[in-house]
Image (tube, one colour):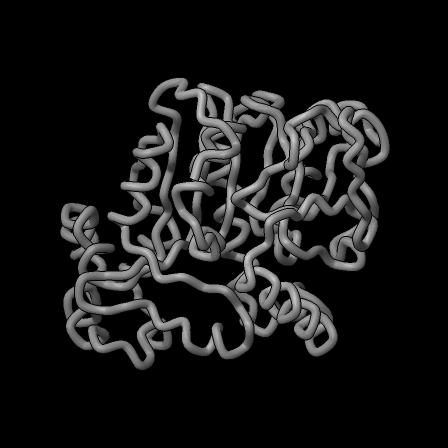
Length: 308
């Protein structure tokens, strides 16, 4: 076990340090799955179904990477934009990064190649049999865990990031309490491309649920309330990819949406982007759009793992 990686880990059951190969000081031992330590505890029925669905996806598409590539070439551009945002937030500092909802591993693995002096840890409830993007890296590690029970010591992580994953949390207050617990006081969580429930439309996850995925439908207010309870402030941001979207919106993005005609007429001209920027704080409340959300500690709260 890498010493720097191991020094960050804590037992999700008793909070004791991990002292050897996935064994804590109190004697709790954790197995490996696909070469990654498995710290998943207290899994809900929904999360268990999601793990089964992910394994079915592996056999059909070649894993998360195959599923992402079905989206076409745009997804790599989108991921590249997210990596740029993460780099801006981190600056030139050597930090500890944790990704929640590792998925195809593109973000974490490529962040590790770009920042060799930082430590990058990718987490998910299920991991790929092997990293699909290249060989092992000295500063990149994977592990399995649920968002509501993170196997890290208090105040040990600089930046948490995730893409289209926060809505998988079944218990937002508990999840945010864990995130606040492991974040350093000057740390941050960056949530990219979260689809929020709007005033007029509910994000439709029926297909995902039929396929076994545990997608929830949260509003901006839900996130803001849960974050505040856990000692986190929340800010909605206007990401670059969304500005491109508003400048020249692809019709396919609104396929089947009730609001597509109204929204497309409103934003089809590039010179209206300034108007969109002006009213952007209201947009996620009114329409279903992908948003970037930044969460930061408001103060040291002393939130424990047992917080619900």
